[in-house]
Image (cartoon, rainbow, N blue to C red; front, top):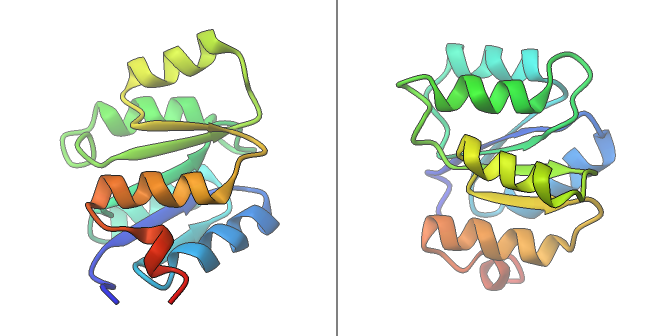
Length: 132
């Protein structure tokens, strides 16, 4: 088990946030934030995470605005971002990728695919190592 990686999950849906934390905590340090402000507080008070997973529709600040802020900030622009959204419009997905998102998952999504993407970003097989 390699817990040297840190993943910040910014998701206002408590159930989904808990599921993601449970799936990823075996192989990483996982921090959960219920909104953009809480996530930003973590970012500015702690070391830079290795990955950010965030909802594009947050109650306090738009996830899209947060992505744009992160990708324009020298400290965070190289941090991979996985966007989660209920939006299934291809124009919206394309816009997210233009902002610098590394992966986009439309809700509801298969958690196994998310684990595969996280594993690919880290060069580790998260799906297999999570079943041990």
